Image (cartoon, rainbow, N blue to C red; front, side, top):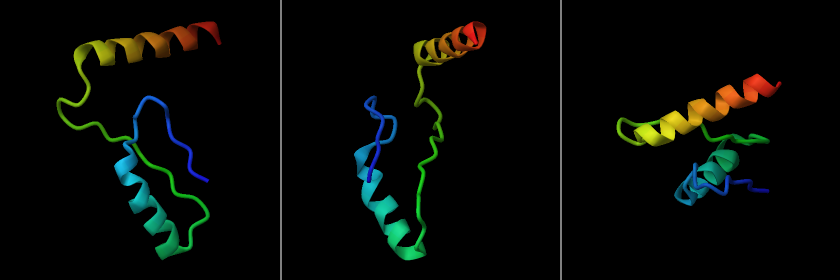
Length: 60
């Protein structure tokens, strides 16, 4: 089973690499890790992300 975010956080071009890792290592699960590159997240994206994080922490 493959689960992907609808916001294209993990581009589909990495699916084959993940399947190959499962096949190579015999792992039961492989999870992608989002590692932002310089310039990959604009100011508005970072602001919105922090605002949403604060909002969820506030209501919990």
